[in-house]
Length: 103
Image (cartoon, rainbow, N blue to C red; front, side):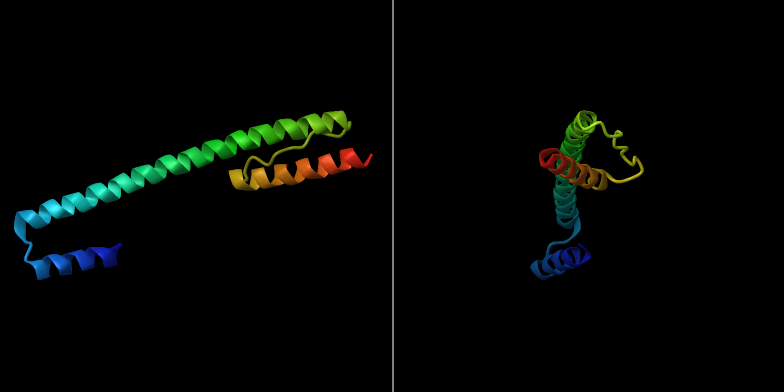
């Protein structure tokens, strides 16, 4: 980002943009960056929400499979990241599905 700002400053120097015009252009740059950051926060929040919903669904499936197979309930490690929990649940779900179909 620093490189882009330096390039803009060089371009503005070359073009002859100074004073209030330069301040106004800096404002526009900041508005664009804020907009991009806000969009990215919304996208990442939506990603987290989808991941949490997937984890909840997988946990219910694993719980149901453990009950059907008379196995102890799978304990989710709460200190793990959402991605790690999701991966563990996917693996456990697939393993239980495979075991259930084998017998």
